[in-house]
Length: 233
Figure 1 (cartoon, rainbow, N blue to C red):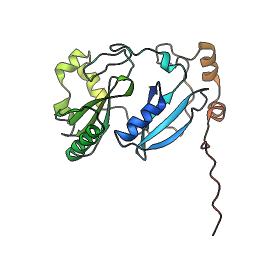
Figure 2: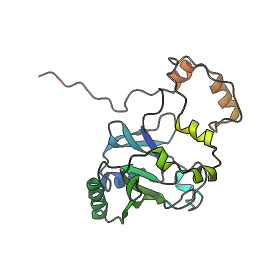
Figure 3: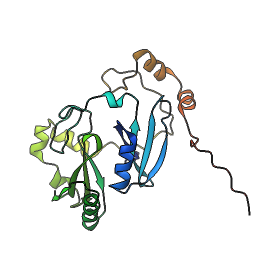
């Protein structure tokens, strides 16, 4: 079955990319793995902080970002209980594997002078909470009880969310799909589907352009630093 297997990276906008790199390297122990001019985005800088070899925390700096005001309750939630605009990140939770590692991470964060609350036991996970640069609401969590849907999908909350029993069954058992080898054509434009907010004329041209043409025009596969071959000894 074809489905997403995890998070490759989550990208956060920064007013000052250096401040974010320093925080996530020093406070959380994530090493800087990549920093380069953002592909196809003039003036943009893009950093990748290593979580594991398949998952990164990404930081983007664009020239105008520092001029966008942070407004708690609109642009940022500020805490895990706070509100923010639909489509924005409410909070971000990193993972460690054990409760011992969770406490060790709490120790690390506190040694850097950053205040931390928890761990709070949520059954499905235990979590500590703290703040990051630019009013980010951050969490580190370790797995708890296995998520058995019979115990963790609450019928009363399904009703609050407007989800019927049949819809719930569909959501808990997505349709199996094995793929078609990349042969599926771009579907016709449907205004009821989500769309990227490019200028309409440009977006329609992108949708009408063959995949291989867009891929060739938009790919930047070479790393930014050319490494010379070491001379053979």
